[in-house]
Structure formats: C-alpha cells, structure tokens
Image 1 (cartoon, rainbow, N blue to C red):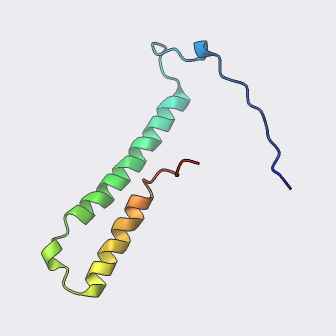
Image 2: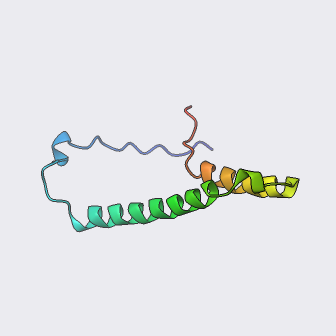
Length: 81
C-alpha cells in the first residue's frame, strides 16, 4: 500500500523577518542545539586527545574506530535520492 501523500502549502515569504526579535521557542531551540553541539564537541575532543601511539592491539584500534565511527555517523547526512 502506497503511503498517503499530504501536500503542505509553501510558507509565505513574508513570514520570516530577520529583524524581528526571536521568540521563546526559537531561543529554546537554539539552546538545545548548543547543548547538543557541546556534547559532541566533548566526545570529539576525547577522541582527538587519544595518543595514536598508545593504540597497540587490535582491540585498542577496534575500540577507537568503533567510537570514532559512531561519532561520525551522527553527523552524516542522508544520501541524496
């Protein structure tokens, strides 16, 4: 069964006013985005702080690659159709 298509009308171009003060919802969304980026930055810093010379065994390398890949996949965009 094909999914039902719902047509969404275009937003009026006048709906966005770059000079209008941001409302509570936008400020809240920006705060949540900042918190998410901070978390990712901390995870990335922890990975970048690993001394590559300290990775001696296949298990060490495997753990590093697993963590790095998981972090990179959270940033990957969906492929274009």
